Length: 194
Length: 194
DNA sequence: TATTGTTATACTCTATAACTATA
DNA sequence: TATAGTTATAGAGTATAACAATA
Image (cartoon, rainbow over the protein chains, first blue to last red):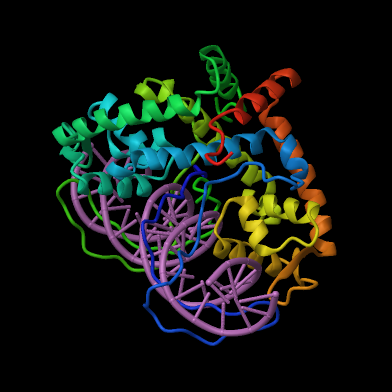
């Protein structure tokens, strides 16, 4: 359905062993035991590494958008890390906030994800005490999604952070250029059925 | 490191049971057994469902890009489904093709992913017989990545499909507008270290 | 029969940590 | 010590399939 987006700072992980390189194959290793030097580095995604030939990629509108999105996602996640709110979670909170009595199936359709995915998303937000499932009036199968008081407070703070983040993202462009950008993006490949 | 992108048509999946709704909890179900009606539908992501209030999302440059990327990704995956080539795979093939004797670590940096991710990516491409690991001259730890003849042929065909896909994506814009779009996107939030 | 929410399962992509072989 | 490739583990996000409760 809706591809895209995933990555998110996994926070932590397990451990295990690796092996040598070319032609060789290693045996095994034992779990746990701190690493002397800091392992990886990660200074962020460089959209255009010097002296690298990107071929057709440089001519594609789609790749330009992909590059931009990767960097924006990075900055977004850092900006909202303290609340553990990721792009899909933020979108869900906003949609739930602005559209009272939303049902899970409707949320799924709006976000462009499967119903099962909406269930997991709402499960997470509920566990974070930001969203609650209320019985939907008139339909005992369904739920009415609502923000909790904490959800409203958190969304308010997170929204400020997102607006700030977005201002940073577009800081190199004038207001007019940002408007042009959004307008052009909105005109790309309209939905099949639309 | 590099967030974004994931989704991809999983192709198939398992099965299992679910339950009722509000307040109720179900028991179990047994595996296998065709479903009468077609289960889901999925007519593609609608970036703006009618009568839905998107709140701040509508004012964010980041969300405009996210919306666009979701739709482009969808179309990309459909276009290259016959070769089982996803965006990261296509990028890797192009980069390997245009930059001979590339090492895995370099590929990882260019794509903005962890080395371990590059290993899995190359593993997949190697299994598809599109890429091969050659011993790197002068460094017995490293590999030189190269396209196989089949890899070159597939990349050529896939590139044509991608170019066509990209033309479709931008078909509602003039050449000039597409150039403007790419230019504006490139000016968004430059990399921290740059 | 169709819809709503759910669970089970699986797959892609990505990450961190630790390890081997080599430099 | 540092680097290249690797494996193990983890987890977010998404998908399909099948099911119970209800409409």
